[in-house]
Length: 350
Image 1 (tube, rainbow, N blue to C red):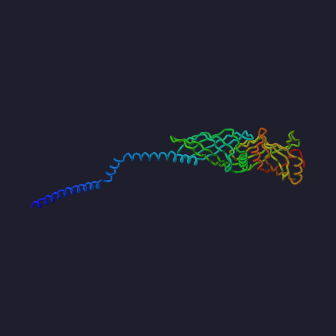
Image 2: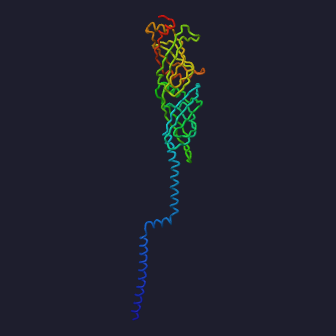
Image 3: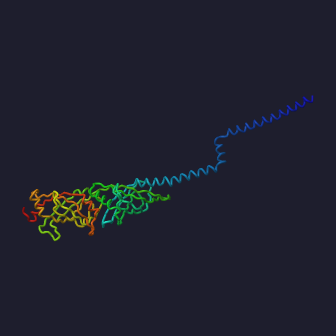
């Protein structure tokens, strides 16, 4: 009987403990269900309440990265692109006071840009070169505000950096219809609060050349039977077209005169300055009158002589300018002169 009573108590105790355990398990299950029933918004809020500081650090880092990329990558790229898309036009170039190693340059430039930005460019040294050749000189481009249209004027004495390259440029300018001039340099660009950035300025400018002096003519001349003390026996006028924007002081230019390969004399253009447009300048020549008479009484009985004129020398203030002499020697002009009529006007009857 006592055993049966003990067994009942054990069973009752076991039942009680089992019921408590079941209740706890049920409670845990209910809590999990509640957690599962939370919305994504609630979970996000809970996450942010716990990890807000981490998200703040990430946001600051991303903002800093974007700012750094804009300042040190984006802005320099935009600045260089604006320079590359601008155009450079030389509206006037004057080369005067030449020496064997230098000249005075006056250069007027027009710079245009369609960029929405209008930065400030520092002054910088720019090289001048015939496209594909070594630089022949360096000039200082002044500081400028790069608006839609800006001007840059240069006046300075330029030391010739490479005489061979300068002779190649002057020859190309004299002999070609178009010349490609390369202007290059680097400078600092400033825009608003951005730090200054270095940009490369590299422009190729297409310029009209003198096209082998096309249109060269001697519209009038007279012959003197009594030469002057310096041997001059022919004076006249020479017309030289200059379709370029260049004004060039060549000094005293001496030209060789020949007919069919036979030399008949020299002519001089004193203090020659070629300006844009048509230039009419005085000419004085010392000719071999014996050779001229032999020609017009022989192969040219009509009195019309096809005279070939080639550059011989360029002298400024007593100094030969080899870079001009090389250019002048590369061009030969032929003009037909009515020497028979000029001799008749001088009183010579043939």
